[in-house]
Image 1 (cartoon, rainbow, N blue to C red):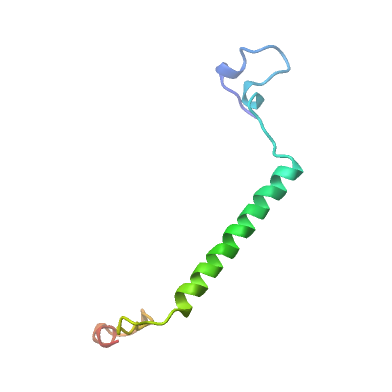
Image 2 (tube, rainbow, N blue to C red; image 1 turned 135 degrees about the vertical axis):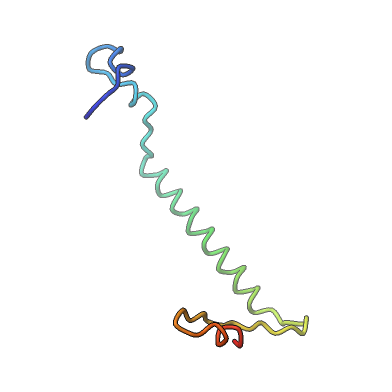
Length: 78
């Protein structure tokens, strides 16, 4: 491990890089994970509601696939 001169000025056995070290507790980790799961579930519900709604605009969405091996004129016709 290499350290610069700015880290050698402290008392022996100390390292200023570790002064602000905060490791989350198990409860904090569980809460963060629960928050992420809740956010994912909400996003899934919103996406399902978006795709389940009736399309009253009259426009049709066409999905296509780009093929890198196809000729240029074939790509434009899709």
